[in-house]
Length: 373
Image (cartoon, rainbow, N blue to C red; front, top):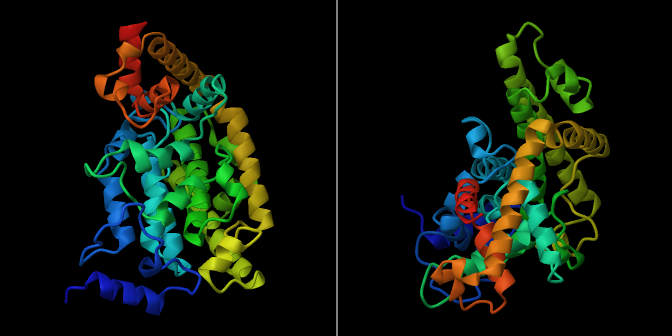
């Protein structure tokens, strides 16, 4: 039997939690469209994100290691896919809208610069010269609202309000969007925020061990790692020990989030989606013990992985590339492609330069740097 959009929407009403966001009551798109007969609005949003140029470019953007460091390290694309997988599973367990959570997760890094968080920090420093800053979540929203093009009669991808709101309110220790001062995001967006943290904590440990920057002896004393290792059969071959540990770490974090979110919803008396966004506290959170465990792991990674010599040298190179490109383009605007120079969206040159550089892959930026310097 083929299901129509209306039938899928009715199934959501009948089966999802009362505080879930329903496709049928979406606040809609900035530019009205016929939603079609088969897919819900959030399904269409997900497909638009996946088919966007910005999403495809994520395969060439650094997570921690630049692309040529090795074949098996995470890129910004694989990170986004891992966040989407965790978010969808969390949404299913909490009986939320899986399509909305998945879409926000897939789109949350569309505006990220090349060269990881070092690139974002450098771009933010450059933009401060113009009285502005740079947050990749705000740039992600700019990508879907303005910079990507789907149809000639409107800018951007024309995504629903709920997806765009989830992007601008995305928050991790690396991102501090101003929009957080207004209202809480949907519960679907909240679980994406923490799924992002779970993903990068676990896969950065994995990548750090694989690169030899971290050793198992360095991290086995950390509480979350120790809990994971203690749950594994001690006779397991070392080649399988680390994957097993990473899997158990993720399981511990995800399970704790599920249980704590469920407890929070009950404690806060949340019954409706409106109560989620009106709440003074996020409903999605870790328990206090696991929050402390995650904070200790995060601090360890900052000190011994992100600031290590093996990572810092690539960060410094990336920062140099972005500064040089920005300076070259601001000094001679004609170096920009004609399509960028004629962009009708902004008259300020530094905004156009920022948009162009933020959209680059690592290798494209490096090649252009070597050509222009």
